[in-house]
Length: 92
Image (spheres, rainbow, N blue to C red):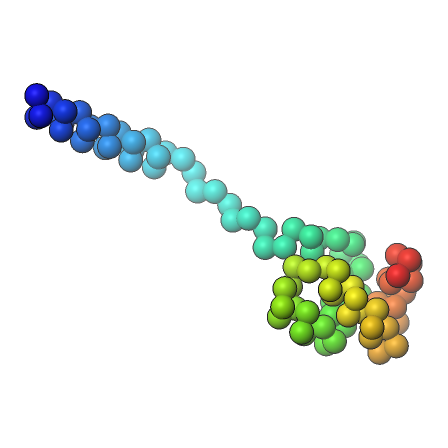
């Protein structure tokens, strides 16, 4: 009896391993889904300024769009004209 139970469990375990191996690998979750805010042109306009002025925010949490926006607003006078225009056109 023990032998039948042991063989049955071994068969079930082997079947489960084979069945799970049939699933394709899943893609990784996006790192920062919220970073897709704005158009590619807007992100290109402000990307250099974010990198230059907002290092502390990026280190703390690079996915925190509100902290990065606050950083850009605090540094508005030092931003390049394209990024200032993006902020203005978005009511910031």
